[in-house]
Length: 309
Ligand SMILES: C[S@@+](CC[C@H](N)C(=O)[O-])C[C@H]1O[C@@H](n2cnc3c(N)ncnc32)[C@H](O)[C@@H]1O
Image (cartoon, rainbow, N blue to C red; front, top):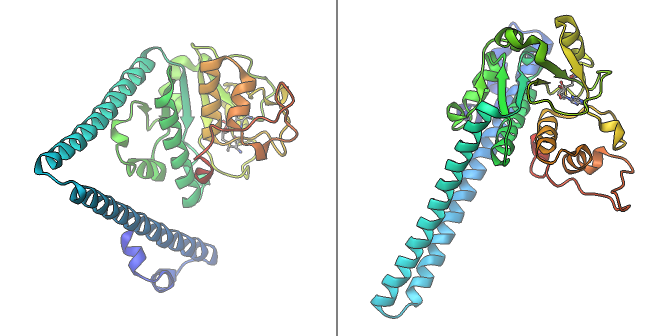
């Protein structure tokens, strides 16, 4: 990927274009451009980090130079060390607590399955976006006081390799299955509920004994109805989120994977669909939505997610 940045996209593409259809050439070119942009962004971020570190070091040296005696200097250094240690201890404790919560969820938490069998229907940018959404779901879940237990089923091919590139992915406390959910969870088929905006049944509550499946798809609804069709063919129950009972959407009620996961997690915490929707669904996706006291409520929890979608 780094190499792609050094080689002009057009030149390398020309070599590989031989023998490819027009569509494949276009796809290849798009991928090259994407790789170049990604490498540029990475380099930019690295440079920013380096500059920040240098600035901090300079600030510190300037502060230290203003201290008159050696004794005071040592005190100053010691207090900085103690602060750093306290910060690191706090982080380690938070990590430990998170591991505890996720381990507990493995035993008693609500099972939420992300169905990753749609890799072949997405382009590399969409796969990348899906992987970012999954990463976001894992982070949000880890911060919950009582998290759910996440499953990634049908985890193979390009999605699997993208996921494996995420730092620390091999340590995630999840169920990662290369098999499809229908195979991996065949003993619990009756308990599977595929969540899909096209379902007739409205999800009223979350049942801890059920396993809720979310379609791992970023498709701008190009594959309309695909999860509904799949669940029907497999004889699995389906349900849609009760969005229509609480708010009006400016377009369709089809949400992204991370939004659905976050709504489920919020509902588990609050047992209140309305608050869950208002906190997770971005304002731009709602229309004329009013809060209980007539004020428009802000969608705050999705912050930082905009660039993942
Ligand atoms: C971006 S959507 C994929 C849309 C896709 N065309 C389909 O047919 O499912 C990602 C997934 O989120 C879940 N989802 C999105 N909106 C939903 C809703 N309103 N109710 C229930 N599940 C929803 C579904 O599992 C869906 O597959």
